[in-house]
Length: 305
Ligand code: RIB
Image (tube, rainbow, N blue to C red):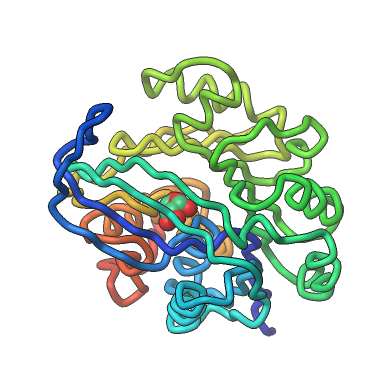
């Protein structure tokens, strides 16, 4: 039987990653150490990681008719993503990322063509969406498009994954139709209006979010690890102890790997451990998509026990 597609509908950004010792103060001009340019955008990153692990992946989105757009489409295509549903309009979205010596990052995006995706674009690809196994969404494209997709495919067999990043207030009826919600600690705090200062708080926030969603909440906690909560499973999975150099896109790498493991039918614990391992490999290398591992880069293919 032919494997069903993963369809990622989201952003493609050209990333300018600046490595520096610290952020400048107000009015200060600070000298950075290094500049890395490359493909990014949460949507494109998640699609790239799915494809690098071997999943049949389709990217739906918009880039500008410019050299940045060419670069983004070219790099996704090079890792095996089907790019035939990426349209060209306006100017390409950009990501400006400041990376600190410990790998932590501060990211700003310019929406560009990502903001030009319409409901009509979604209607045009209905056949692709109804026959997909996962629809993967983030919040770097218009809110009404996200809401439209989730409402339209809520009652199909397709699993809807929402990475609520950057965090938006999601309407109750929309969030309830999301099968898997993935957020980092900042986004989870924003969604419940409470600070998150420990793993225990993360678990409690996960439990608070769970009944608002369709059934699974994952909260990533950076260097700490991640938390997963479902109706039958609640677990903290610690991060692997690696020398991080650049965490740009690590959350996206985690999500791509999680989807891969879920589509392989692994247990929740195995899925979380696999995603944790993949994102640990990602942070040990500089840059975004280029740092994401393929199956061949991974020491063990899957955690089967
Ligand atoms: O998650 C990392 C991504 O966020 C970067 O690639 C940047 O483009 C922003 O979208």
